[in-house]
Image 1 (cartoon, helix red, strand yellow):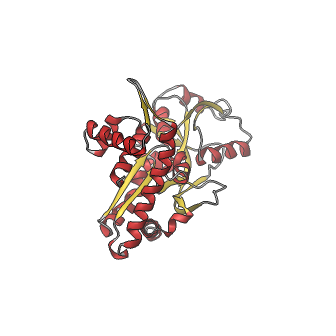
Image 2 (image 1 turned 30 degrees about the horizontal axis):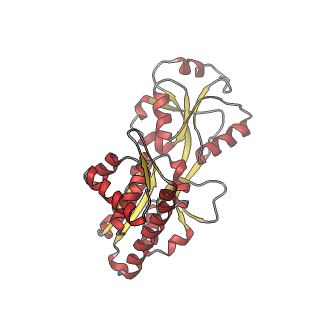
Image 3 (image 1 turned 90 degrees about the horizontal axis):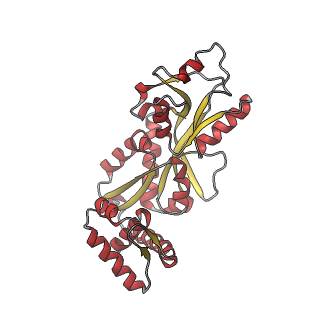
Length: 297
């Protein structure tokens, strides 16, 4: 089983769609299908259960998924250890939100790629609240996330920046703006659009508790970018990190306002498994990230 086949299988297991994997891998659908068929022949059992409408991993496929991740990680780590530190090569998998890929990782990636041009950086985007679990499950090597109050003992975290949480309201005339125009608005009646989970939600729950406010939750949303979009439509007041407001592309459609009390700041940084910091490639990226932000302070 070659590393390329294992990488294709991991992509298929994540997307559960041959067409999507063929697009991102720059392969034909038939080539992806042949690789999976060859792996199933080698293993001796089906790894995927397919019909006309859906695809899912079989029980054997779930077991093979664990094997494939571990085997590929061991292969990459062996290549890195045997390679020269001055000429790092290999692949790192990074997870972050769409906003963080530019505003947080962008400067780090630019510096790293200028120094280590034989390293492939694979960036996956999604809800930053999933970052810790993706690192713990070894789906990704590193993730950008806010730092929770309690961090798993298995994880290492390096802070890159602090981003205060901010209240956002729609700029256009709407019921929400009318409600907030009162001299002393009742914040328990204001419709809030909040993150459904993650570090920012933990900070907000504590903020509301400290102020003695039982918020009226209009919607709970996965991903901070979606909150800004919903606020711009006039659906409620949103709370997001300042870096999301500034980098969302919708800053002109929403307005930051003062709230009933000072909102906390979120510590944003990189996390990884502590044991992975022994990997020269990962530890080098970790050091470049810390250096990039310490030099910009």
